[in-house]
Amino acid sequence: MPVALELLAPAKNKDIGIAAIDCGADAVYIAGPSFGAREAAGNSFDDIAELTGYAHKFGVKVFLTLNTLIYEQELEAARQTVFQAAEAGCDALIVQDLGLLRMSIPPIELHASTQCNIRTVEQARWLSSLGFKRLVLARELSLEQIREIAEAVLGCGIECFVHGALCVSYSGQCYLSQYLTGRSANRGCCIQACRSRYDVKDAGGKTILRDKAILSLKDLCLLDRVEQLAEAGATSFKIEGRLKNISYVSNIVRSYSDTLDALVKSSQGKYVRSSCGSPTGGFTPHPEATFNRGYTHYFIDGRRGQWCSGDYSKGIGEHVGETVRILNPRTGSQSTVFEIRLRKGISTPLANGDGLCVVSAKGEVLGMKADIVRGNTVTCNQKVEITPGLPVYRSFNHSLEKALENNPPVRLIPVTLTLKTMESPRYSLTATAAGSGATASVDFEAEPAVNRDKAATGLLSSLSKKSGIFSFSLTELPSDSPLPFLPSSTANALRRKLAGLLETPPALPDMNPAVPPFDSIDHNRIVPPAQKHQLNCANSLSRSIYRAAGIEPNTAFELDPSAHVELMRCKYCIRYETGRCPRINAKEKATPLYLVNHGRRLKAVFDCARCEMAILTDTALK
Image (tube, rainbow, N blue to C red; front, side, top):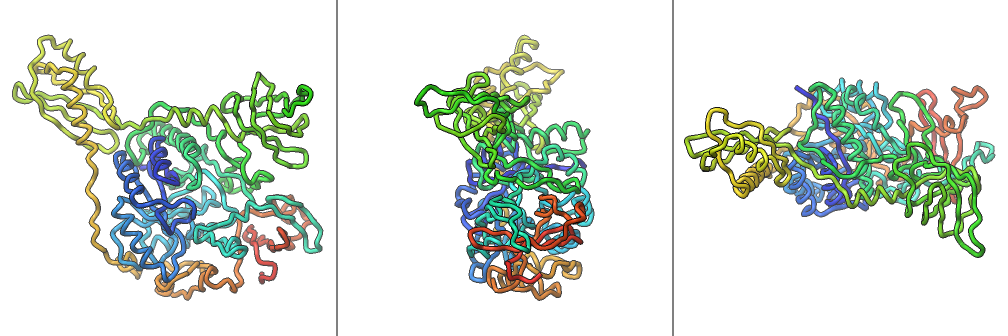
């Protein structure tokens, strides 16, 4: 059996979800009105039902993000949310809070969110033994670690992030936003303090770095590692970005869809796509030209690299060249004119309306609009203090954005048509959809054609066309009987009827409550987790799950902020990033460093045995 590969796209709203599907997504994930881990990306269930209706035409799945911690007083509201998700046609829930396993809910597939801190074989076995059908792995894993987890939980789906923003902390283990402002990342309210700027000081108070976004990471891009991920056991490739706009999602989804299509084509039947149809026509994707903070492979090769985004925590876009010469504008002009040495192979030519920025010698990011572009000369109708030799970035690609808006692809499902003769003058036309194998047939009466060759040409022309979301192709004609004479109007009507039959939505699942998922599993096969602390237990139902495994969990930090916990634990390391790692610089010691922002001080400690960094409150114990 071939392995079905899934491209999973983010959807801030219904329209972005539909655009992602048109651009080749096999599944989309979206939040309902509450309990989604992006506070600013909620949706009504009416919109979600409309999205699932469109998605299911192509066999595309829709996952609801129900991945926040749930407080005791919210348990019933969360349970009702599950019913509404099922009624809206959602195919699965992405879950962080284990309390959901104790609820009587409709039969719906449960996926363990990356917020469950899935970065070890032990954690994967624990969650798999609880009945989760899919595990969303931590972003910090290498190919070898992914392979070990996939082999340890055979039969459980493995989902990996391949693109988008990187949290500096292991997901589900970051409490910095809660500590600083009372807004919890585990509740969808993260203030993204990791993108803020800090002074870094040593234990003696000496300033090592001043005003740097030292905790801000580059964006992940594994476009060239999809095949390796599939070979390691991943079957779902996830794009981050439920706060991103429609042009970003369209561009990135189309890029990865094209890559997956190429992998499937070259795999000699080893892989298939998990949905039907593919995007046709439309814009040419350019992932380098859309929002990014610089790209990294992160830890996928099992090696450290320069992961910090530097001064660009908000993203500066594609590097397009360097300033060569600053030209003097006419007297009294408030414009800036300069020549640029363009890099080879940029996504699209520089054009009027592009948004540009340069990074000054002081590290300042100076933005401007390219009002007039003539060859290598750029005129901006604003004063910007720039000098020769500065890198130039394009933060807004006017040509690409215009193509994304005005030239979207159309997703079509190939359908083969077979014409057969019944008892004269009756004929049967059978349609078979590629991918799903769905079939539909219509019978019709027609006069036999006098000229067979002419009739065959006419049938091929009139039946091999598009109708709805289908692209029909007549592939088989009866060889031993007369062909029908079929006017174009009749052929069009037959095609439309077949399209309607093929597009008939599947029956909704049974909405009768089932037993709680936890009660339906074999408790003797539960594998207790190795993790005993920072379990994010916020309600009695979640607590009962851990107790059944012999663990008495601490109360979630959100409910008991007096507890001494790590505010973050990270694969990323400030010492390594700044050349102060004791393993590569014998003169350095793994002494704490301090991050200062507006009078607030955090302590960075270094666990060299695990090659990890932890961020603590300045008064917290090691």
